[in-house]
Length: 105
Image (cartoon, rainbow, N blue to C red):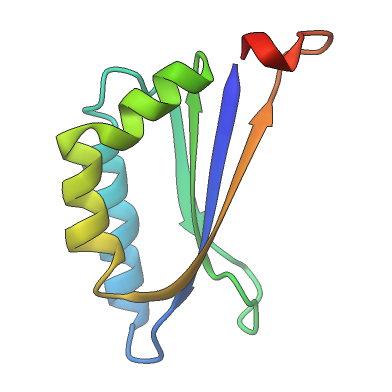
């Protein structure tokens, strides 16, 4: 199982209402991607956090993650929800099955 976590910095013009809309949009759009097994998205509880918005996706393998990231729904999400309102992102990928050889992820 692969856990894909993306942290985002927001543009200063993004309001709390807009951030709430981004969270709702990410949930409604990304759950339509067949490879997504589980999705979490939300905002920080610290007002001064460097990365105030996150999206976390669980998929079966790195191949499934690649398929997810190439899916038209994900591409549309990035173009319409992420790019206009963020300045930076940090992408992290983790294997969540203990003892699994990473070359088979």
